[in-house]
Image (tube, rainbow, N blue to C red; front, side):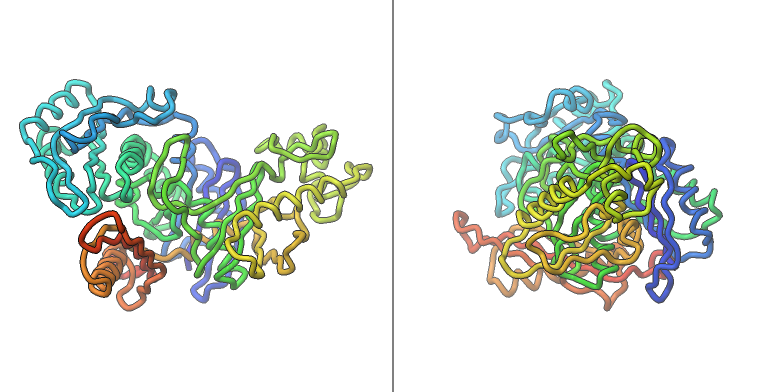
Length: 505
């Protein structure tokens, strides 16, 4: 049996999945500030201790970036001189975030051209001076980025070795070649964000482990990533940025599992927002190019999600419009059905007979028809904006707030599967292990494709996938016509089933 947990800003959802794939138990528990007690309460609600693995998705890290809180000052080291000096690291960050995260900025020699040709030789003496400045400022985490490091990461790795030898093991080092894709500034931003989150990752993962101990569970712990795959604790400590979009991703993966659909639109309605995404082959369609996270431009793996301000706690205005303001976690206190004085979207659902929540008599005089139609129209419009073809598209509704919608205009196949309210926890529980390659290759197409696929499979198996279960889930080719030598950017994603014997070995 497996346990999937999704730690949200309001609720912590948990699901117990049997060996045969059935959902055996589910529970919702309030998220707590200390994390541990909320997760422990959810685990206790499931009533199972003999499980093979526990998978957790969390919004803690993205919330920390959005709030500009619990972040560590970072030493940003860029390898690219004499190039790249015009735009220093963090040049496009919002001032409030930059003030918190910017500990030191160093531009050094190094980096490569698109074909792996060095821009300049690495200067060990220069890096030792950087290490001395980092030590003098008392910084504990470093982000190293290099020009075209997805093509050649040798500069970053040599620089990391030199800095680690000078600073010692207590200083964390993040490398952009392991985090982002081609695109210097966005990849560097993602690496700096990752570095700023690493101390928080240690505390959060420790809290998860403590929650398992409190619940009496002795099983491997995994965290879900942005692309719907898993990573073990050691990798989660190194790459907390990889969990940023695990919430919407888990919901979409759970929707696919519960509905039996692999290609569809997923509408996840929570307490404050509605997230709309597209499933392709059972996995979320990823955002192409760059993505804004907490007002920072990044280019790591993240699902293509459209969010609108409609949820179960959304306020209903006098004209019947709904959202984007919401009572959020105060819903049990402020909604009319719970004896409060605020008309919310949940009250509309109860008045219409869509949901049995609270006391229906308290909303007997509410006419929900106009507002619920506006909600359905806005959700349908969001789904329509996400589709890329006019072909019929099934829609799966999940999340506790999905009771707001009974049907969507323009979409004939609308489903709300069993256990829809905890689809995010189910998605975490059934997650697989993945490996991805995103590089610029030069050479014959068949040769470089074969090389990229082999490397992606190898990465998946190293991450814990069972040999023989790995399959190629996605291949993307982008010919770079402006570069010589038949250059092509190739991205390959491979996924496979978790091999617990390998993990426990």
